[in-house]
Amino acid sequence: MDITTFQCPHCQTALRMRNRQIEGTTFPCPDCQQQLRLTSTPDGELAVSIIEPEPEPAGPSPLKIKARTTWKQLQKGGSYLLASPVLMAWLVAGTGALVLILLIIFDDQPAAVIAVNQQRETETVPAAAETETTAIPAVESPVAEAVPELPVKNNPNLPEQIAPAQPADASAEHQVLVAVKPENLPPLIASKPQPAAPPAAPQTDVTLALQIPILEFRQTDEIPLKTMISQFEEMLDTEFNLAANVKNDPRLLETPITLSSKNTTLSHLLEQILSEVALTFTVKSNKIYIERAAAP
Image (tube, rainbow, N blue to C red; front, side, top):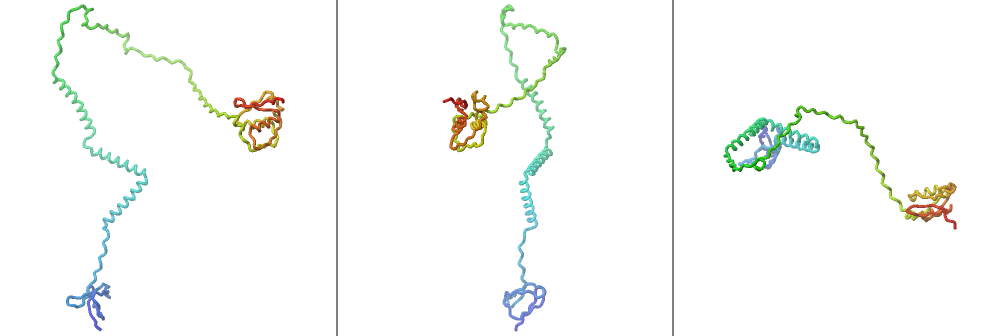
């Protein structure tokens, strides 16, 4: 059995191999655990070399990590500002105030100096105007033509004589203003506004209302005639006009009435009720008139 002796290049430990190994075989050192590889020399002999560890991929630099963290914080702050309009408004107002303060601080020419310069410019303008007016040559005045002498009254060239103004009786300085005492007027009493009149309700067409179909009408209990008439007034939305001989007859109005009918109309029901007490009705000017029926 062939034994080959090597020396660990890392820890100088003696290594022995009993079997012939193939070139390129890797194994760890028993002492230092360094990975070794069998290589061949130019003379054809085997040798042991250290396997260099593969370089680990370099991660991002600390500056890049810090910049990325700052960018994430800015994004988070921006999203918070967008979610809060009030905070955004305060931020904009504060930025505007800061800009105004910086403009005031770094202004090279104060407002007082600007005002003085403007005042000086206004003072120099009239002087320049005077120099311009003096430079203009004077225009010769025209020579008046000779006018023949005429009487004062007939001379049209003479100006009219204006009468001197009469002096005022008293100067304004010596005038005294006296306030007039107002008369004792009675106090004004505001009138209460009148309420607006309610709109007039639309009038019911009695002729059409009498033709309303009734599937069934049942009044099994006896009720007075005047109560029955009141029910029909509510159904027709109108007020019946009773004749004098009907209105002034309380016994007639207290007559008990019972009625039951099917598939009829309001007009037919009213005829049946009034026929039991010898009454009838007519429609005149969209009103119902109840009177005694004429004797046959």
